Length: 329
Length: 287
Image (tube, rainbow over all chains, first blue to last red; front, top):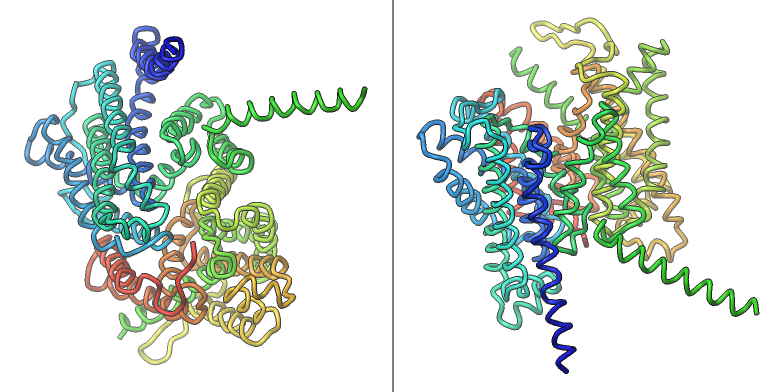
């Protein structure tokens, strides 16, 4: 009895300690390899990880929004405009960007809650395109086609400070989203995804939950966008357009939409891969495309299912050997 | 007067081209429920193949148009067989395949041609002037090709055996199977026709406006708007939605300048979608 308890105790601590060790290793990276270029790529990875994981959080309620790039853009432009025209400090504009994205997401979520499945995806896609056009049409306020320049930077030109800031922000956001998904609300959302009729028949206010999860997801997307604005100090509408949204969806789907770790793995691989294959120059997009095709044809559950698939293949091979051995005798 | 004529011709050309591309998307979407996000990239590739045939191989323009249509149609059959058919009903995997196809096509065009804007030589030269009104033959040719093909598609879908089999499949795929319709053969045929139409539209737009590796993204948005507004299972709905969208895109810039007119057009589309989520003419998709 005591032994069993100790085993479960160990199991309980194994996963968090591995994750903490991983975070420490990532935190030590600037000490080992401090090249600004690698730090820049990793900072971008952190920003997109927040956005991709928040997109997956919305999908657990059975909604598939195709406007997440636009919500990043809303957060980025609100923060950038508040910083440039009002002179607000980044510590104020970043939460403001997140909250504005959340507000707009919930306002949009109210009429969109009556659209389902494919129609929800398409409606949100058109909304995202509309946001891009509004940014283009914003004239001097948003910078229009030329982009918004002159946003205050957070830490000057030191990449290491940014690196630790975004690492901390990512860890906090991931913990918050993890707690959210495995709380009572998250379970309710999964129930809605399975059958909205059954869920509402047991007294779940389906519409409110669907709007709320969109708000939560958009808050983190806006926060990531606002962080991007203060890191990059230059914003271009094209980086929040239709293709940006599609790539965020790819980050989620490549890693695996069914698991929390999926978007993290997917983002890391898809952002880092073209950078490590810089020798290929113009040919490097092919690499991402072929990776997507490999995952589509061989791993329906995404890259997260790879260890499980390898284990299954290994055990089946072992079994197969045994059987042939027996029949051979 | 000049303005009115220019607007009306612009409306007709834009509408006919939007409808041509959207029909190919709608065929697959209606029959198998596949949202082919790569259709914009296929349209772009059609334009570039036309350009390559005319400028590099030196073939007659109208012949190049037909060859490009056949080549892209064959590519469409390949896509339908190996990239879409295994994943029917699985939205996530279809969208991944489509993004992979988009990336491969855009990167290839980028490497071979480069990102600079190019255009096909005009299909017709000169200006037709009747009294005060003058219209270039290029515009007339573009619209004539579009209208002729749309008429052919209407005839094909409504009057031929294959077209009626397509309609049967989009009404009820299992029922069509039970009636002995060869669903896979018909869907391959629909993919061939749809991609060929997209290629022809790509060539015509390449001569009328210009070609760029990312022109497909813009067209894809228009195509999605048409297909969703008209609803699933409706071919005639696409014509009306295409005229409405062409009107919005050609008339709104007269009153509102720049990107604001696009924003208003998309806003109107979102409102229309919220009023009737299942589209205006067809039935709701089961996905």
